Image (cartoon, rainbow, N blue to C red; front, side, top):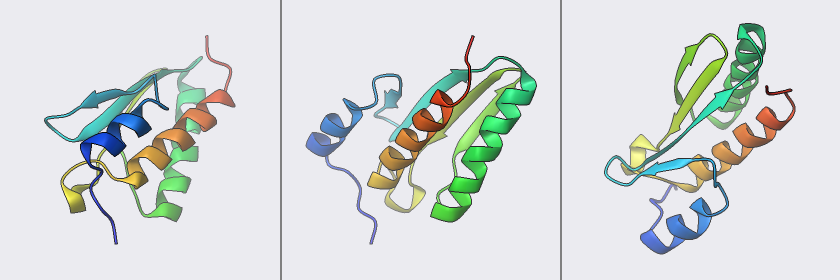
Length: 101
């Protein structure tokens, strides 16, 4: 069963994601990733999409050319859950495999 992260837990866990911005009002985190070109951005999005399907936890995202913005929230708990933190860590690790400018 998914649980919404409490304030203490979310603060501690978000400290492990320094490149992500926390929107406390919305109960979401987001990060913009800048890649070399559109092909890399699309490959990055594909990698995230495959993992999202496996986890059944899908991001909101926006893409323009070499930029991908990912927003994560858990609608079932109306805020952040451990799934969001785990997916953010996955996205960071996936991004590290690409050569950013």
